Length: 80
Image 1 (cartoon, rainbow, N blue to C red):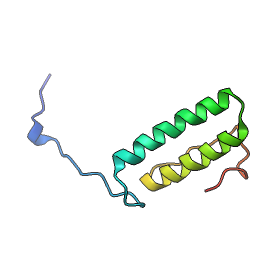
Image 2: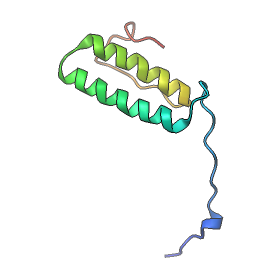
Image 3: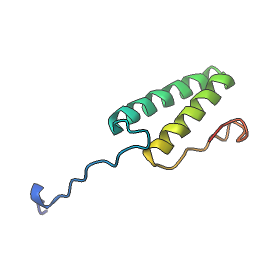
Image 4: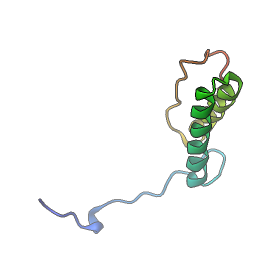
């Protein structure tokens, strides 16, 4: 097994987010919002689930990643 040298690895700086915030801050907020969504789903709180789903999609759009689908919620209810 060959060991790669660190000089051979390419490190790219993260792309700036659309909002101008740091990528790490957006990722942390995204993870936190997913936790809130899962808690709301366990509690069967559709209002909180809808709010979290909308926030998750906004954050994913800000990062430029694929937006999540929420089959348990009507697509009309979830913005963006």
